[in-house]
Image (cartoon, rainbow, N blue to C red; front, side):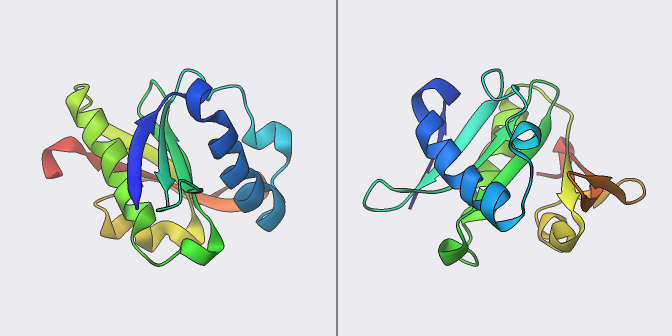
Length: 141
């Protein structure tokens, strides 16, 4: 399993493949919500299996918001999401961010807590799915 930072331009087909399955097919997120036009200016992370097939992806926007973290169903539970999140957080630290944040689907909040994020605020709906804002201070890496 290889997790790398890639530009959206060079990895767009891999990113679209994973997100269209996870957010589009599994979670019924509207395409215009998922594909919000913010990918080209975001830092992208892609997880690739031993046969060079994409199995996971995520991004960090210029303001430090991490999002679109997704792993194909058959690859979940193997630490891929954690690896991708770690790469994004380490990248943010190298860029001088004091804090990063994300909007976690409520059912995934415990995953993010294990990765050093803390809930920050009340639940809200995003794309029709309950979310909670979570933050991570860089001094706790």
